[in-house]
Length: 211
Length: 263
Image (cartoon, rainbow over all chains, first blue to last red; front, side, top):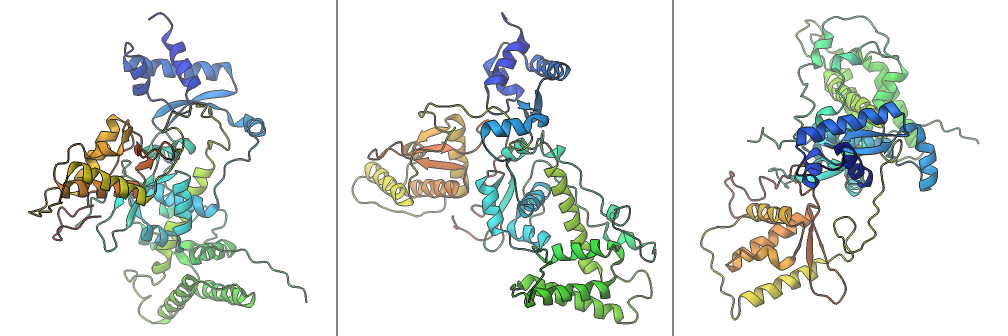
């Protein structure tokens, strides 16, 4: 190769508006084996970190993307003349339910929050943060929801496995700022432990429990 | 008369309960049901007094709380530890809710794209590049049906004979086929999805499959310009397939006993 691999990759990353996976880079650079590409990506990450630039190379949505660092957000926003992208608390909670419990149907989402989710689901779909994964074999064949690649991109997640772990249920009992123990009763804590599903199987596999 | 409204707007009964639990600084595993029920009902009264319509969900929860309270008063249920605590009925959903609330909080504290961190914006200025931008013209269902009719007329001249033997084609398979076409070629002509179809019912199943894909948002249909009857399909998913696509296992009931149902 005539030019250093790291720099070629840097050029691709610099010009790309979406995260590039090592495989995608490999398609543009068939002569470079994927392990070399990975090494170069790590090299770039380290270089940027060492240089303390205003940007860093982030691993998101199973790819790599150059992003400005958060300290510079106010200036970038001024340049873009926009206000920071934001989601309402309700939308965020709904999104969290979908992220952790996918694949999930609307009725289940509504059970978690105890409120109608129709409007919020529409907003999230419009923002491309969630997607329809199919329909469930239930009366009315309800739509099944899951998160999108865009969700991973926006929330700075490498993949679904890197979602922050859900807190253990028993952790809510004490230790929180608010929770002053009323009469201390041992044994009560166990009551809610058993219904603890694993956060997600990552693949968002569809209802294996079916029938 | 001056009203001082100190109401936080709660989105649902669970939201309100979480608030009451925090406000009273009580242990979620040992909810003082009498206090919480009273405060909950007081809140509902306040909502009524302020003419805020109380959603049915709030009333259901009120009934549940009162029910739990009455159960707590019954003897026997508290005797041995094995007995289920009547409060579990609300403790569990509450815990689950609080947990997801925290998860939501944790998510929002990450470095969000468009809020904390920024990436290069899409700079494609070349209109001819579909997929990166919104299609120029969306197609209505009627235009699609027209296009479908044209295909049917072209390929099946004369009278259309419909024979239904047994089901050979399923919408699900056709969905998968269209997806696989689009994976090879993210933008294609409407006609092309029918390239393997031979029989009238097969065309119809393919068409239904396309409608389903458009409905669930995996495929976008557009027309390059007015007056041009050409209709194009574009993949609205990641064609490199890192994001798995479920053409839903049950578009047509494979394992069920129902038969012949389509989208």
